[in-house]
Amino acid sequence: MARISGVELPINKRLEIGLTYIYGIGRSVALKIIKETGLSPGKKIKELTDVEVAKIQKLINENYKVEGDLRRQVQGNIRHLMEIGCYRGFRHRKGLPVRGQRTRTNARTRKGKKKTVKAAKKEAPKKDK
Image (cartoon, rainbow, N blue to C red; front, side, top):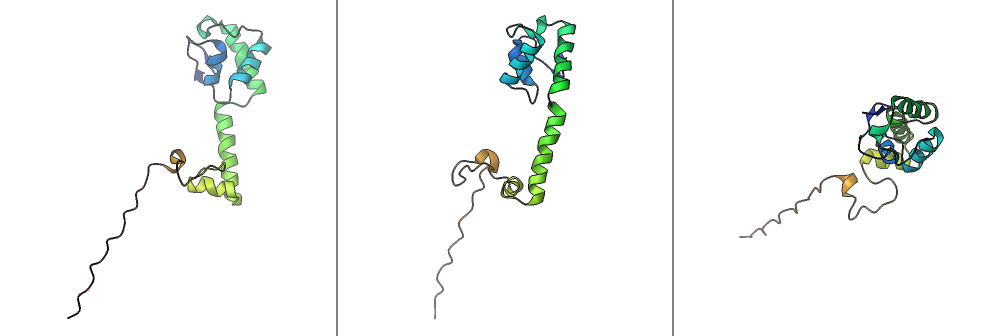
């Protein structure tokens, strides 16, 4: 089983798809890595030798920020936005969509489960005697 950057890659996937299981590596970066290492994109992960896995690992460590380091950087960037009090930071703090999406309807992913506001009871008119 191939373990790259602390991630167990699925053994039955093709190499170009399997590399995308690493946070920070998408399809285009995966193809670049494969091209630079000289491997075949159609090769299954279970067919990789230890030397090839080490070659991929070395290339990723030298050229790309992935997994924990990348997650830390993204969280740091968001924290910075919140600290300086900019609009995007405010939206992050409030848990609302950050990139201009509408919030009157939808936005449930960001806002969470619907909180229904109950209508106030109407008081009965007082009778004068």
